[in-house]
Length: 408
Image (tube, rainbow, N blue to C red; front, side, top):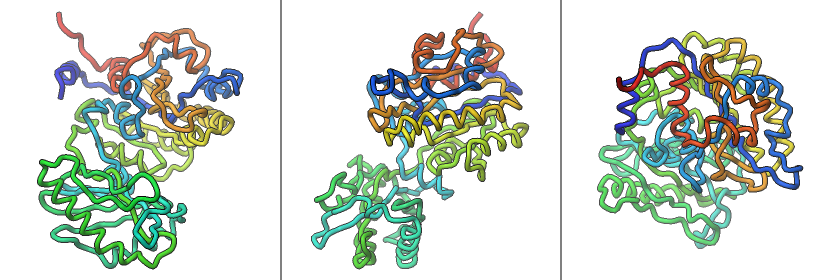
């Protein structure tokens, strides 16, 4: 912990406050000529967020640092108040947790995906034509039935969606991170597993196991079409980080649909609430568990998905769908509510970006910026200004009256 974290911890007071963080994944966007210089958030009809805005303050958040484009992992860890530079988590760990797998000390997890190889072993399609989930499940079952151990390590294989799956190597003295075996483009062979830190004996041991796994796994897949190979990324062990409840003295719950976001929440000790598939169902489940938790992380994927497709109208509609469901949550309005994104996903860029995402914060002690709507333009004028996303939780705690006075 930093000296600043220690200070926050020493100032923290017990509270019965309820805090809710609603994340419209990738909601931030760019106002461009093609859409009359409006963003999807500005073009959307959002009467419920508009009403909330009149009783709130706004600002914008730098997801990591100026100019740095975050992945979903760093973006969400920052929202949860963890420094995304100091707290680095491999994608394999996140995917494994999201699929409901338990990671133990000595586990190294990899996010894998099936690929296509030619007769010389060169990658011809890094995603094997995006095979269907049932094909992935069959192939994972085939590998799992034939490979239960490599060297001294147990091997655990779990299918995900489409062409993706997770491999866990469980053994003594293993560490990550390991460099990706994905060559990142077609026409190259699968890369050898190499430790990111050449001085780490545990990482070298894990890399050797991964290379040995390839030696036995690839012959099993050689006659499969189109998925006769696989690539690994984000190969790492689970970091030892303080839980969300330890940091903030709040009992947290996660309401998310996609495995990755459940995994990120589980990584910091949030309880995953399973079942809801739509934002309306997520908000209804929030009402049901309201008395059991102090903090609610509610994740909404579709703004990011449509941003990556460059589909302005679909992103606008997704924002409107969340807004229409918002009154469900407001039936039990939390003491502090924040609405934001984990990063921006501008439609013109069809991907994540470094642009600060807008944030709205409302509580009995927030006052108001007298802004009629929650938009990027309005957020530019808000009293929160531009701040690093890792401080959002501290703003929320302050508005819940969770901090004692500092100094005399």
